[in-house]
Length: 81
Image 1 (tube, rainbow, N blue to C red):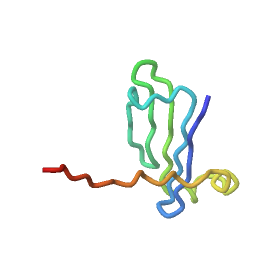
Image 2 (image 1 turned 180 degrees about the horizontal axis):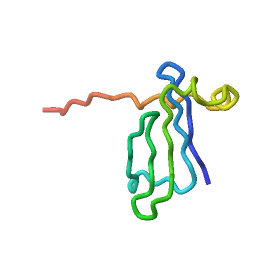
Image 3 (image 1 turned 60 degrees about the horizontal axis):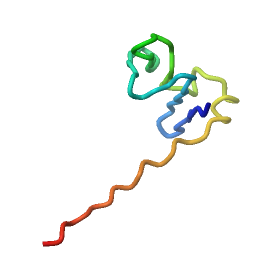
C-alpha cells in the first residue's frame, strides 16, 4: 500500500496519511492542534494533520518527511472561434 505523507516547512504543517485513506470517504474534524481525518464508513483514523509541527513532533520525523508535491499548474485554454 502506498501512503503519502509530507511536511511543509514554510507552513510548519505535517500531514500523515495512514492505511485505508480514501479521499472520497473522509470525515474531517478540527482540533486545537490540527485535523483528524476518519473514514466515514468505518470510523478508522486515516490521516492526521499537525499544525505547528516543529513544536510538537520529533525533528527526526519531520526531517524524514518529503516536501509536499507542487500543485499542478493551471493551463488556460481558449476556444477557437
